[in-house]
Image 1 (cartoon, rainbow, N blue to C red):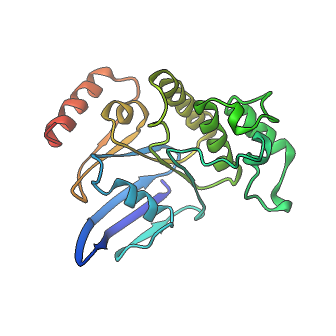
Image 2: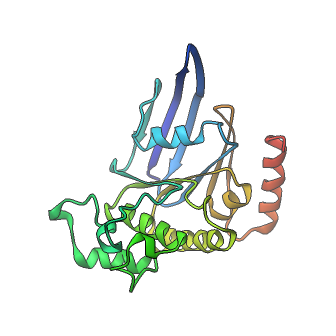
Length: 230
């Protein structure tokens, strides 16, 4: 099975004269065609790991190997849309002229449930709809992986629940490969095919989640809570 292999990844930052070790020897396999969730407290290193895998930063040591075409896209907590562009133009933002295919763009807009809102501007959309545009923009470049950094954290409970269901459907129907960062155990259990628990810059544990297995989910939740001393 194709995916991404991380071997002995290490990363540190200088804060004043003090060196902070953020990631300490991360070894991880991230499979394709699934949702892998990186779970942990704020400050544990999960966002740094996402940025390294997505190529926004370089590790101090170790290697990241892709078995699939190395093309990634990001969806952040904020939608980061261009306020002067409508939905259609935001989705195709970043594409080269020769890459623009009107049928393909319309298909992506339809998939994320924004049919009829092509001419709407960001300030005319709800927070959930703005994140749908951000997801569509990421999909438009046909990435091998979409990196999602707590994309639903700023949404209200009901919108977040709706977007989680939409993401599950999107992944299932389109076969999108996703690396998803969250600090919510419930969100991790709902979305993840694989859950990687990080604490203090190290992998604490990894779990493979069985679909529609409530008993396993309860056991995993209990194990994660115990491991994170919550």
